Image (cartoon, rainbow, N blue to C red):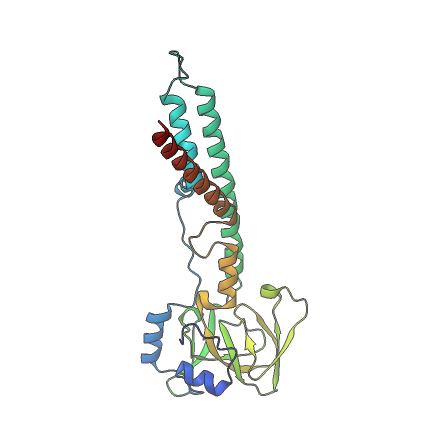
Length: 259
């Protein structure tokens, strides 16, 4: 499966074959087809209204159980004609608010972290297309199989394999992505990662992954802001809520059959 194979494992001739590319670059028709298939080379981040985002943290299994308990507290009397249990109702609502606040803050911080990462992406790059014609384009327009030029000071626009280098090697600063304090030496055949910076030398490279399929994209997903996914805390709370709901259903069924 070309979409899922790890192009870092193969020799360059195989990479060219799998990506149906060549040292002369892609044609406009190939670029159009791949843009439709893989999407643009950028990290999409969904923006929601803050109030809606906050309310969504009250829409999960654990919150449903607590909301049901709050309704029961005011709908049913404590027996003997006593009034609804307002203290329990207020206490449950307070817990719901605290839970939603924690989730919202976690999501907000994750979103800011992703924005900080995205600020390090390359805005433009030099690409070879249509039989070796070089042009400058927005980095978001890159697709797998494109041939790009990288020189001193350039930010790597997407994950790529080095196909040639006048000096034989280049030096890449990967601190923004991996945390390594010193630049790493790369030679022909090695991979260079999106958002890292060329500190010495120059080269040409073939793009092997773009957007969320890059190592940078994977890091953004792990932070939790690149896709509309629950944070780690919310996943734990959802599991607790599911457990509570299953327990309640079992208890109700047992009560029905026992009486």
